[in-house]
Length: 231
Image (cartoon, rainbow, N blue to C red; front, side, top):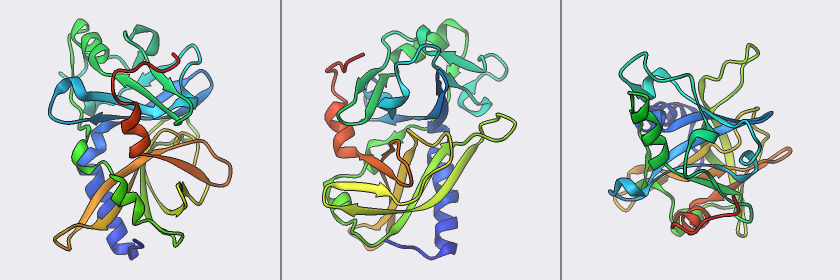
């Protein structure tokens, strides 16, 4: 669905309120991207951190923190080294996805005397096959919440309003995104059963040149069970 610019601005603002604290900057060696918390159902065991598989596996990875995602204030470090988190990332290169169960993140926080204060993307807005099927070759509005990279090296939370299309089973954002956006969640808006506009998390951004494939949530859900990946 292609929205008019005013509606796009309203949707971008609302998404920041709903899931802004799900999004964190991620770095792996020289590669920078974005990761996000996802809650698969009501069970805390179902919480995971998701990003693109291509970002995971290089030594020296770390998850950046913002003051708004931890409490009490001033206790958490600026970043969490990936090597400190056990169990670590599982990579699923065939699907483009990496998954980190968050139990280790919560233990790390508890050992340091602080707590996470995040807004995971809820399972209720994860796009099902019917949402993907409604996408067409005609460009629709898409919203990418990511931590870009400024000239001074800072990584603020940003919203890019882009265009998304579907070509057969492939879904992609039709423009090249700025540095730091790989791994970020992609949202669309569609009419629900009552005729109201509802947001859906379509999936996450994969690497690309000129355009970016999207790993849709049917692929993500297929790797969320406890089956380990290759790392």
